[in-house]
Length: 199
Image (tube, rainbow, N blue to C red; front, side, top):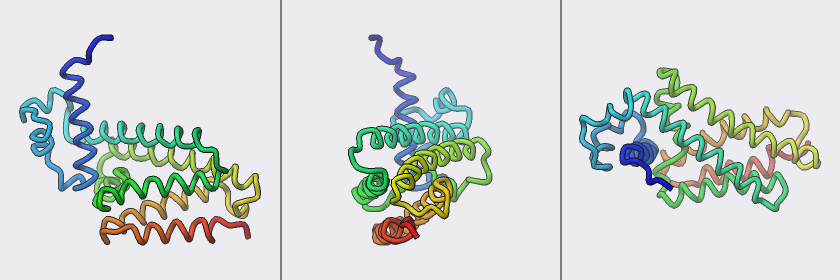
């Protein structure tokens, strides 16, 4: 197998570093120079890889979203638990990852949506794709749980998935603000102990 060209390796490194820094510092707190310095790429070389900061961030969001959705698909396929337990495990697994990062990072889509969600159509499309994909997978689990009589039926699976997405993103924002995951854990308990339950 041929080795990746150096330009492809550099591009991939810039994207990964961008994910890390944007997740921690947001769009306006992250400068191109600090990313280039971290990857040891000359400043003048950036535009050999990306047309603009906006195009760069949109590509980062595409890459990040693909990884998130692939991970969800894998976790759902590998789970031997029921759909409701699987859904809870997904959220708890994500939260454990954020706790391992001292609650300083969060969902990149949520972070950037709060900053540039209405100002960049390019990034907006990438964020909508990931959010829609996440909701679709959650709705599939919720529909299966409804079919098994485990989840309330007065709301559709799609409606419940949107409720979970919005609640979860808000909880992650609060996590970064507070520096701990207590609020997110409370949201999980409310969701699975009350809000989703059959009425």
